[in-house]
Image (cartoon, rainbow, N blue to C red; front, side, top):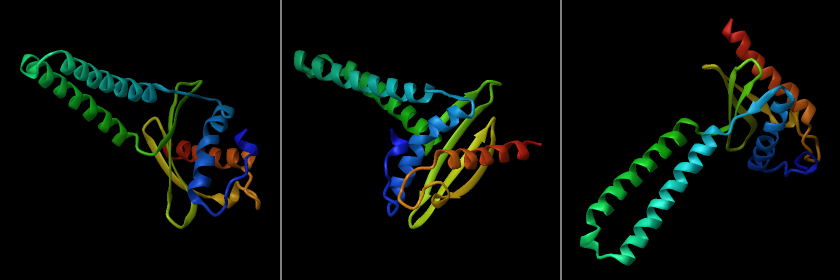
Length: 169
């Protein structure tokens, strides 16, 4: 279990990775259900690009280039479009670690980031187009030996989510 795993306190990336891994279970505890729509879309687009490349490879082996020239051009255009769409999705959802919906239908998006040499978990919470950013020091929810304190993190992330409600009013 990731909550019993010890984390290197000297590595900000390890602290962020452990926190991101526990984000889903913490938000599930708060009543949110994770949505995998964006992940599925990205996987589908990636699979389609691989299929196009594989089919072009097979066509190139079986036929002469001049016979499949128009097919190759069309496949390259479709391949480029799919990769462009994938690029735009990745650009829009940069650093997003969690997308979910609560029982009332509110969509929540949580993005996280860290800055080099700053031991803070920078979190951006978006609930129905209302955005709040915050910074939580890692030492507030990791103990002195490097174990993740789930209860403390739940309390801190709940405070960040409640700031969105206050900003809405």
